[in-house]
Image (cartoon, helix red, strand yellow):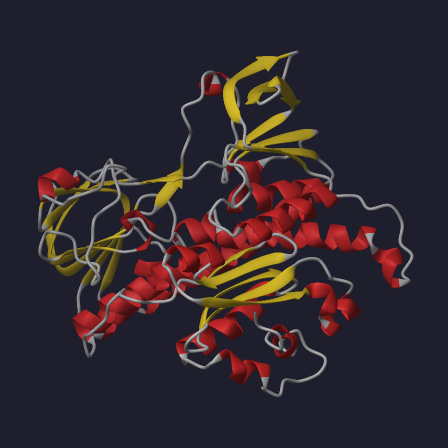
Length: 463
């Protein structure tokens, strides 16, 4: 019979948010039980940010090697050793897992349970341990951080062919001859460009009329131009009617266009069509925890569920699915439970970066969102080819764009599509956080030649 164990807190899911929360609670003297089904670190460390961006870095090296002659450097043919690319990725992932394990090991009063957790009441959890047996845990406070996983859209025939997702595509031991990608957002574009640079033919199929459906049209059009320049084939504003396997291992995706059906043939199929929360095995109904129609846990601005003492953080609660949001969730909970209090998600900035090459860094309102809110705005815009540092680096694709309030001169939002865009966007975010008018950046003295210096030029003419 399983022994019942009592704790001050139970954390379900050892993702980034909970891994950061563990030492905060432990240092406050709490006894903590951490339950993880598969691996420490969550999606970001094991299947998301860290491995994908490591592989993106390898793809960029291949891209630069092919461009070497543009810089006056002569090289030979570029060959991709996928096994070494994957080995490098695994080494990076391992280092972050070890770091997460170290944080847990150093925290006193923390027990790690590897297994599947499910609620048996609002204050008790059963863990079916991976090595066999059951652990019964109870606590006054329970934190849910079980994340999300790739979703499969309802497409006739999709379940009859081999399908890759954002996790399994990083486990391939050979390069696809022709990769078909369903989805034209972050995952589809990052992997699509990556494998094109590795040498695969790549076709992206997007149901909406533009890539990155939430971005302004000018941003989306520039991204599409960059993808096409890199050799990707794009089909926008089309619907996938069926998927079939033909000619041995070939996969056929049939799309409906204004000019009739088109059959696309590929060797591999990547589905990049969103994510679904990992909540179905938690037995949330027994605890009385409410979820939305898609299964995401409902929380308030303090990350509290409708049940007292139960919280949710990270991707499982819906909203922006970014690691930095999960990190901030842990800060808010720690502040409210063992700190000074007052932690809230209200009005927090949500920056994000898409790690295509060039990157897209975004913060605040887009131009379309500002107009939809009825704001009086001015727009600043600077092509990257006018940025001195970008010219020196030979990285002139893309542009910077900022949205300014006409009445207050406050920066409302920005989109930077260019080399090191995430870093440039962060400067604009800090200005927004400090409520600086755009003129402070226009008139600021920045080191030459840096990309940051281009913010002077960005805001010279605001119209």
